[in-house]
Image (tube, rainbow, N blue to C red; front, side, top):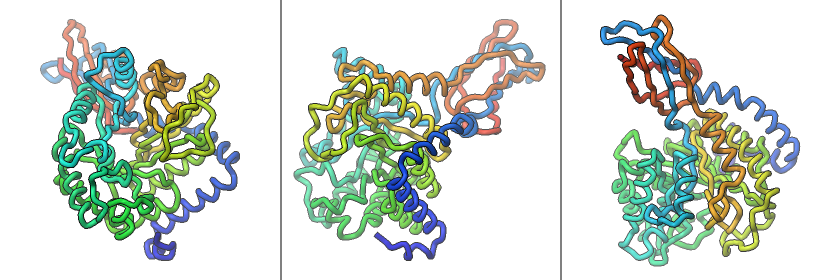
Length: 451
């Protein structure tokens, strides 16, 4: 890691690093007060949501000659959020007609518009030269057909490393470059968001090709290389989004991103994991994490959110077999629901945060065997699922109707996203048009409908 002094030549980077160290010190010394501070921050969340996640929608109704139409009936129906509410979707099998799988798919599509798909190298390409293209394509197409944005995860990572892959960096780096190029180009137009590289800060402790590469060249150099391959494969397309994803929220990750910033090599998105198997983060810590990484000027995605519906465990073996004695409990489900509602409200209110991904949808097959799902093993919803559904599809969802005035306009505040607008004139003539609300705050989104 670079020392603080090496960053002081660039004042903004120095300030970012100092902020992260200060946040870490507070986290270690004053957790109860931080939680109360988080509650105070949450108190302003609804005002921030209205400011950052909503805009003014103006439906302007004209006749065929371009004259305003008064007293036309207007119905505004939201069809999709601009904000990405997601989950990993590793258990998806579009061909499976079992009741459990059907319920899994229905629950997913009812709540989410974003899905993380598994491209772990050692599982995706168990035998060299035989990648599992078809299965992942079927998963991505299932998502796309339902208005769910798929994301590939991850392209470069030191874990789930193929048994056949070499450990010599000079040999494995060209293979990784080929993998990055192959997947981005093969799935272009279907998958346009990628976790290009995962957890580079921790890679040096792994004795395989990626770990040795990081030990040799340093984490920042490896991240720069992987992002450069992705951008070359993306050929500068505006619809490609490349993420750096990490569970580190302290000085080490700040230092890595600061070095990338200094070299003009930041990812398109800063991905922050938040696995809370050992206890829910105080809300003040959540907010400070948002503030710390927002300073890099990139959108922030909370990529892997876990909140268990049982007692947290102080000791976790992250690389051992999954637990078999960690069931969900009614009391745990109630706590999970309360915290999840607060967490999502706080994150949705921060202007830098553009996506939240839950990890995993169901307790069935959940990472570490934890009761981490929004659904139980039998796919019945926990209270947390119902609370999120209420927030995402009702509280933060626009359904409005009214009549145009003499100027032919109907106005309403609307959440950013996609819409279907239906206008009915006095004669009964009806038009339905799609629309996008993209400008927040006081910005107007004008949609003209001609009857």
